Image (cartoon, rainbow, N blue to C red; front, side, top):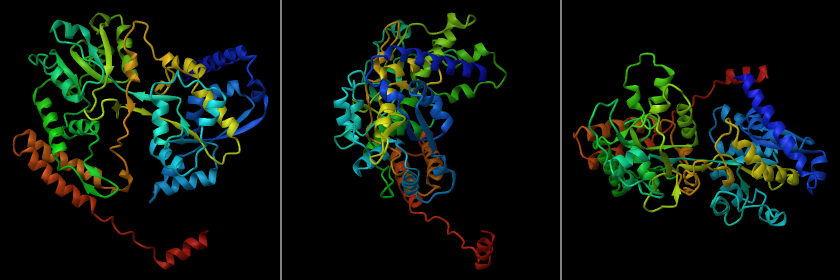
Length: 475
């Protein structure tokens, strides 16, 4: 595998260098010949060069790239990750910052990022070929201005088996269907038969956890069970009751498939072909499944296997994932993985922009779309296509949700998630067993959760003076 990886990297570099030969008349050629430096903030040096640095360095060999890893921020116990993050930037002074959406929004508001609008207009940077809504979304986060870009994005879609829909004379799913509509569609398929042979309507997640499914439905409507910044439980509401009831009805219908069902089968050694067909959508027994672009690779891999290709789903297509009724154009299953922004006080703004311009451009998207190790999908729609005409636009037809169900979770007690997760399993299992109502479960979880939120962390024992003296002497 290492040898193959080296071959792929070499191929990518050679492809980019050959492409560079066609840029002979480009006004940027003089820039490429100037010696310059670029300090990049990323989670790992090796990962950066594999993801972006190698192809950029092939075109800009005179740019000396230094990667400052963020792993140190999280390597040790931190009381305040935000402060540690700010300190890291202050000490390392990177030109390019790698940010999540929350940090991007905050740093833009604080005036710590370089505004890209002027340089985009000056250089006539092509924004038309980018996935729809990306620039608007990032401008919205930036308070009306653009302060960052991303070379790739992550998105899930709803795959569907057209043959099964035709067999049972059920209309195909469409873009922007609500969760309730998709669940009702799934329930129209038969539920009889042996578990290993029968048809399922919809594949949902990994486990038959009522709280997990209800959380997915609630998140699509912008509903959280806790206000982390205020340390206040918000689970005992009509909105949450509706989400749990919908999830419970769906599970009781026996139309849903969960990955955990595969684990209930015998642990006896399976052949590679058995492994390929264990997914019911791939083996043609599932009407709809939620997956990302890697799911396409799994289907293709099974289709190319001589022993099982005749059993693999062939007539399939895709639409957008189910959405909330209040937010039909948004999805929390669409996200930008690596937001790159230029530090407002960077001494190497021009070089930083050249990097940003290239890794969000067509040439980078073309080369990387052919590489299996690419993380996510390119932001250029030209390279998100299917030769057989499937609806690949479903990958980018929804904007990332502005609702973050995990916002400020770092402010909660460390034990909260584990304890509350255990409580939800206990109380919702009683609901599934008809031992209590949904209202009763939510009332109990509201009280228990609030107690967990207000729990004080254990006191840290102070070291004895003698120990402090020994430490000082050792230093």
